[in-house]
Amino acid sequence: MTRSVARAQWHPASWQSLTAAQQPSYPDKAAFERAISDLSRLPPIVTTWEIEALKEQIAKAQRGEAFVLQGGDCAESFDECTSENIVAKLKILLQMSLVMLYGLKKPVVRIGRMAGQYAKPRSADTETRDGTSLPSFRGDLVNRNPFTAEDRVPNPELILRGYERAALTLNFVRSLIDGGFADLHHPEYWDLDWVGHSKMSDEYHDIVRSISDSLDFLESITGRALHHTQRADIYAAHEGLHLSYEQAQTRFLGQRKRWYNLTTHFPWIGMRTANMDGAHVEYFRGIANPIGIKIGPGMTVEWLQNLLRVLNPNNEPGRISLIHRFGRKLIEDGLPELITAVRETGSPVLWVCDPMHGNTESTADGTKTRRFDNIVGELESAFKVHESMGSQLGGVHLELTGENVTECTGGARGLTDADLTRAYKSTVDPRLNYEQAMEIAMRIAGLRQVK
Ligand code: PEP
Ligand code: CO
Image (tube, rainbow, N blue to C red):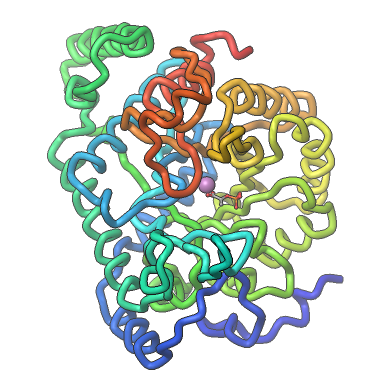
């Protein structure tokens, strides 16, 4: 019997009686309460029918009928909430999904780590430099990155600024899509100006030509336009870390008789905050959204089975995505027993590989990076392990950007540690750049040899 049986009645604030890890400590409590109360009066960012549509898509992916591409920044930043950045992110996700659709021959469900990915878990509450200790940077929703006392103090106003930017981001994405930006007839809209001549974009353009020819052919023989059925939706996802933020937009929808988190379609729970007695698990169990759970080294069979029992007691299809992030070295040893453990619970899950977070390392000068070979290596192992266990990898979770950054080493241009200083923009984890991300998409699509 699990502890879930003994849990009291859920309500959006029931998590508050438990220990909540990774929460900022606001010195001005009254200002914090005011910000949360203001937030709770604002309109939601997403709707329940979008959330339920995504849940259905994930249920399809669980049955092997679709593949999930989840990607975006490690942490969005307020400064980068610009037209150019949002368009670039959309373009890379659309290009990758087109390649994957072409190669895998199944629908690709696009979920951005965007429109609210503003809060970050940290390994320590404080950071010390030259004898000075300040609160750690927890993402733009909480405080600012520069190492000054003024920047690092958690500021409740940022909660509202973050929510507004999340709404602006998704509003712009929706307008672009409604305006035809994602129409398969016009993939030329998705070209990134700066890419110019590159092997990866040449291969991509060959695929685009082939798809366009097929579309023309189909439309000429059926006599009808296909674009309505081909509309590309983009869903939003972020780590559901800052529980007061999540709670403020958690609403009971009378028609559906369920509670929904309306800040995002797909919140996920990190492993650092997934302990059974913690506030995050309590909060997540009551919302009806499809949710992700990050799992990796240290996740035990019992823990995972308990999580599934509490978070998906009715074995609802589409509800749970397990995002595994073991690192290249550990995946083959660690994943199989968890696959068996999940099978024993009877809960359908979508298995998603995050080949980023288990492969982070530091260069000699202390820069955080990831090697492309390790990322591809973990992904390849993930496909293999699932296949050998009679399971199925149904999605991938990546940190990437459409910009021309140099944050991860390796890939088609063979970036080295020395290249990292050239265009390193992330304030948190290193992301794949355009070419590296497209190479991953081609490999998943089976268009290039997975190493
Ligand atoms: C993240 O997704 O940015 C993250 C912090 O991942 P994890 O919790 O899996 O380390
Ligand atoms: Co990250």
